Length: 468
Image 1 (cartoon, helix red, strand yellow):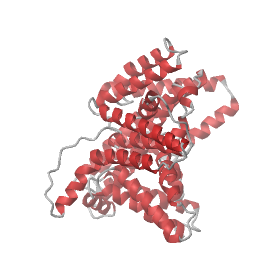
Image 2: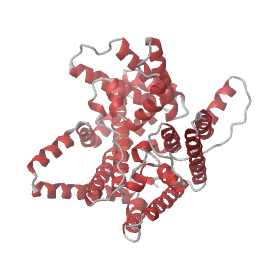
Image 3: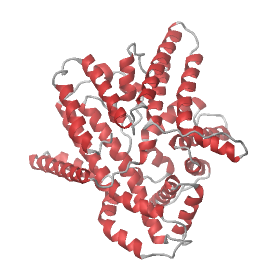
């Protein structure tokens, strides 16, 4: 079930809110149980069988948490339960997400394995990382162990962040499971944040997706340089508004139920370095790898440069692998590894004017998204070649057609990828005007109504991170 679907907007969400705030308003345990059941139903709506996989993950990690707690209380090593948790969670991820890819590689080297048809559970990378966060944070004393499997289940399966994040570390919400406070200000702010995300997804990302899909769908020799650049730029903005829009909706939904999730995006396209970009893009994933992989390896506080480079290599190799079983994702992660090493040790960008640093960073990110979007390395090479003139000329009628039809949306995407709205809100807050507040409410209502009309009409509604 997508947030940007009529079933979610007009049936599931209103019913969940009504039950949560009316008969269960003063019964926290009842609210938690209801949210768990609603979340499992939400997941089962699109994955009726794979909900059993999630329930198995919940029970296994509940047990691992108790095991860790028992060992800690006895003053014994927690290596066994941590190793078991890693083996089970990463093993589950490997079987569903990477097994067929690995068997294909082995068959290419001469083996003769039968490759099974394995469907990918929606959001498995997200809920697996959250499950690991629970066990690891209990081990690190960043959150108390839960004696009730229902509370572990709520943390792992809570529907706002279930299928697309943000990846919520257990330490962030450990106290909120029982101790959260619902307020009208949080609820109204959550509604507004949800509408912003819905507008980003439906009114910008979905429109740009049409151009990107057409450009990346053209074969070798059919793509002009201009249309290749237009397609790559549309995808660059599509993935930002698609994913950040979903994160906005998740954060807004969390607030409606009293939960406070950390931000997942902070205007990444204004970055003037690759390092800054990854502090602003998919912050929850970067933080997860930083806290659970990079720091345990020693981070940057190691005694040699090569150990630091090794740590960066491990993190970015795993980041690429996390995104999917394809050589393109591996190349995408290693491309960022090379850029980061060049920044840190090759002085890349040092002394450049700010504008040049921003342009270089944006171009590198754009090229990386071509790798990310392409079906394979050969297709990525062909597309990048077309961008530099090794395709069907410099410009064509297709580019003119799609540019004319989508220029307003593309310009809006470029403008609002900078903190324009943030500055407007800060300016309005200083004036504390009832008229401005009313204007914002009218604008939010308009965004919701227009977005809902697009959804009801059944317009193109893809979701990039659906299978991650």
